[in-house]
Image (cartoon, rainbow, N blue to C red; front, side, top):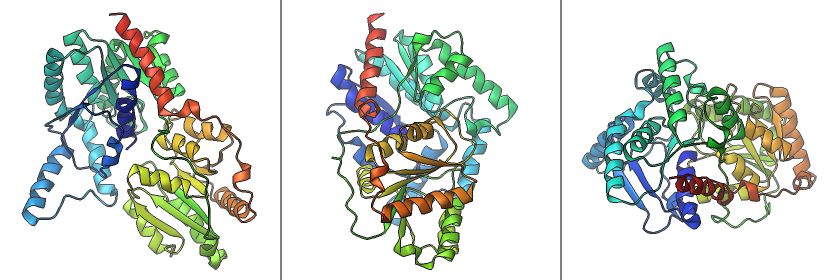
Length: 420
């Protein structure tokens, strides 16, 4: 739910720099998790306008809500991310361009027009995914003349998810991206490499109209405290959901081999997954007889997830091959905030390289089982020798907080408003 967190932090911190916010969003959809704690800290009086939508997830939610009323059972998000659902949504993106949220455009556009007519607004901001929101921003800016910020949390036309799409679909998305980037008054991206990629791909855009606003950690959610381990075994925690491009399979296979070689592994190591696993991966925990080593906690509210990071001895990052090199996951900054050693079984994306350069992460290729085992054995050995946390350098985390990132965004908004 990194997208939800980014938006909620913008809405939380922008008023401190003179920018109050109104949010337009669809009514509840069928989604893997809901976390009302993310609304904590949102300034009172913030307007949130929820509109209808014809997107598949909204239609599914309407059907499930009706079913819940009939059966007197409350709506429940899915417990696992199943491969059939993932394939269905991927196939939809071939025919619903730019994405399956296109059915929200008319409702959001109408709500935006009414707000602009009745309110005193100085700017419009849209953030993707979904890419459909940028078409809404494009239209609202053209109608109103207000400056428009197009925020990119992910790539658009070069996103890894689009590699297997139809050629025509890819072509249309490239054209739409070019229009959005050229028309937006300011383009923000979540990583320096993504910003550089946009500059290279859209050379008509002046450099001062392309700005990096990374994700970050929120310093106000939870006080930091060091780990106090009383169990005698190392607690290794992974936070985040698994999708088509990430799997715990190889890591679980390594754990199985380690347990075979050392049946007492459960007395030295405990691995905890916070978030939704793929159904296939969850089954492997039983198949590999790892239930005494691995705990699957499911989705937890954000505050509880952060508390779990602080209660860990080391952190685990699992990412699949083929991800965009420009990617910096939100958890990157929360892992930095937790000040724990990180075992990153991942390609060297920009976020992974950041943790490695700061001396926080040991990085292993996702397919290198031997190195994964060696690095994990080393972490366990350092823990039982009492030197695990002593391996970490001192880091100034100020630049990685949401407060600092929103401060930078507010400066750009001030400049845009001053030009009108």
